[in-house]
Length: 125
Image (tube, rainbow, N blue to C red; front, top):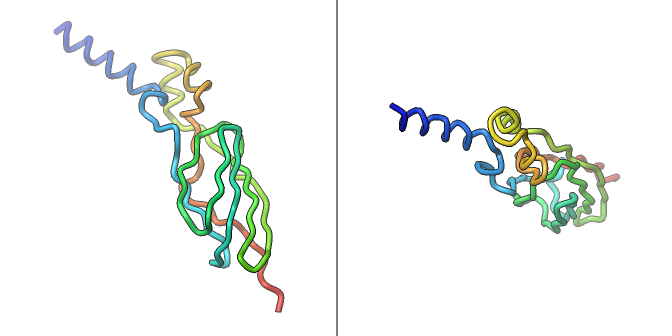
């Protein structure tokens, strides 16, 4: 009985921490609103990524916005930011294990949307 109870509490504690259960990166699929091709530079405090558009890229989780600077093949530009959100595992971590301190340091409780469409101005004709 004691072993079962101990195993239950251990499992509960470990499952509450995003640092132990989340990867440091999250995949983000990006494309232009008009379907064109191009390149983007993505940046947050954890890193910088230069990507082709459209594509899916592994982005390091962070508590700040993912800034993008993009250019289509025909020379149109788009700039902006994608806000990160807080995952639900931080709440369990705060209650069960470490008051959320480890997750706050590593940002593994943060998420970006799985896909994002960069708004781009239409070609003037």
